[in-house]
Image (cartoon, rainbow, N blue to C red; front, top):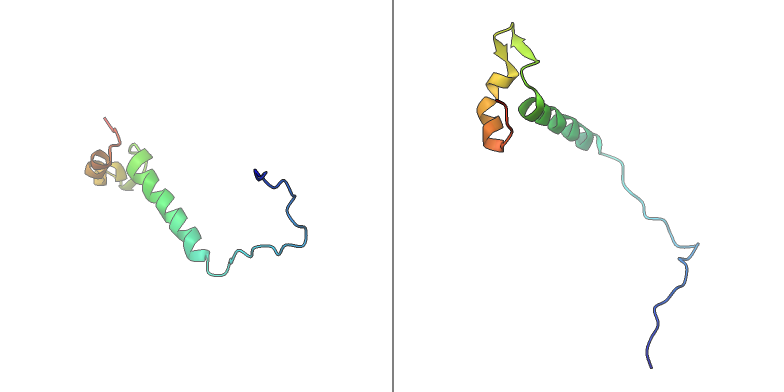
Length: 73
């Protein structure tokens, strides 16, 4: 005899799965820092200057951009 797949709806009295949220502050800061690093290494084309007009973040991470495959010129 062939069995047929069950089409029963989920039970309404099933307990909900608890997702722990305590201690997730480090995860949020890690994401913010990761996006900032990604921006400065991969997206910034010299718009941010550290020391006047001569020292752009783009120049500091120029070799890292090429190593990671980002085009810049």
